Length: 104
Image 1 (cartoon, rainbow, N blue to C red):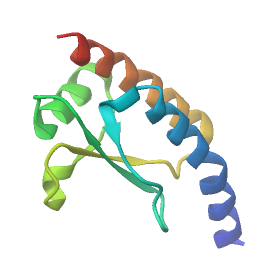
Image 2: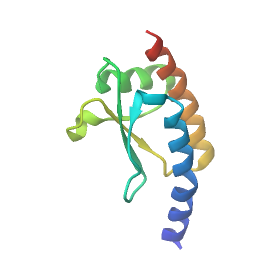
Image 3: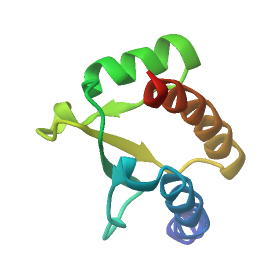
């Protein structure tokens, strides 16, 4: 029952995160994960991921994982295994901050 519930959430949420990443044009580069609930997306900006996620935490109250923690600079890890409303609310906040970063 747990696996079935998890698969249902992931199958419903991946299109949400995929469409959200696509809105940024070539700012992000990623591929669908083979398994799991995480998308590792490479981004194109001079700001390092450690600084980017700290800025996101401080200004938007959203926790993210920088790729540097996994040997992948200029990557962000997006988890999409949460309840859909929670995921969508977090993506709204992340987008606000990313749009500001992109315009700097």
